Length: 336
Length: 118
Image (cartoon, rainbow over all chains, first blue to last red):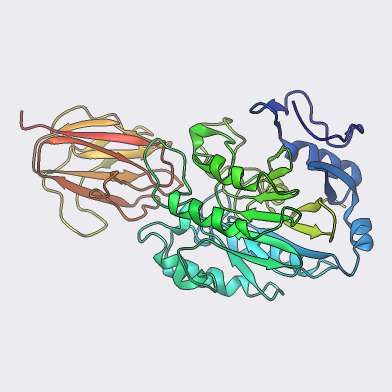
């Protein structure tokens, strides 16, 4: 099993035996939510995770980390799976929970440079849902939100309704890249042309675009890739994976720091593979069961006092010159 | 509670045949008869997963999950709009053949309608 040369003990994130599962050769699947919640209960506040040499490590509490942030650092936020239009028992008020999440983002001491939304903006791809989401998200005090669609955004008319409201500046089919503060960001689409009994795909056209897009980027530039469905196989029976992601990852192998940010599964699961770290995110709308724990990946009803612990957002701090990005998962309910 | 097949919500066409009144005892009973034209989506599965009908039959799906689903064939000839809870979708199968379909939100949900003259 290969990790990095970092042999220091990982007491704070070592998952219990039942949490860790062997992934493919050379990788380790970390079910970090349980460990993170355990740490938060101990610390009484949000945990700051630093990705050191590709391995997530806890380095302290949010307040300390924010104080340590230098002027040249920059922070961005990942928000995911807002599902505007959902109104069933698992959460009858997705607007309310989104507002709480946005309040947390707006309260960050270091204002984020922008927000990435990793898809399922709407619940049923209805024009009024896209419009309501767009209007609500304007309450975020950021210059820009970059979107990629989820499969709940491409119902009925494919990308058309989503792109009318959330198209990237340069236009195109929904995938794009941009550079900010020395980091190369790539937004990918893996929620169109779905086929029966198959995982989602990126498709050859997008893969060719990706290979070409990365050609001009130095290997020392940190790369952040964001897409809705996980770019590694979290759990195939529920469609939690992307069939042709291996090709995309092969284009990213030469880079010293690659961070993959996904949504779709409404919980945080992370994986490390060499210089590539993968992180799925919480939803702001409703939780979903852990892989295989239940008949289907649908909305999971929990007691009312538990809901806020399972929904939230994430801030990501980038320190120039450092491979590691510091990820902070922020549940709506962080016990004090 | 009797559920009677009446009309489609999506408003394209009326049901060609009257469905059998189902006595719902908490879940739809699987329909095996050739007269039956209703398929229930429940617990992320199509009930029945395979249905045999005669040409010209209209099949109606109803979604009983709290998650939306779609009824979609790989060639997109059968293509419902997004179906929320209690929404219905109907398709009239004119020609004999095997019609596989799936849910685009949950692609591992698959079903089959077999259209046979005899």
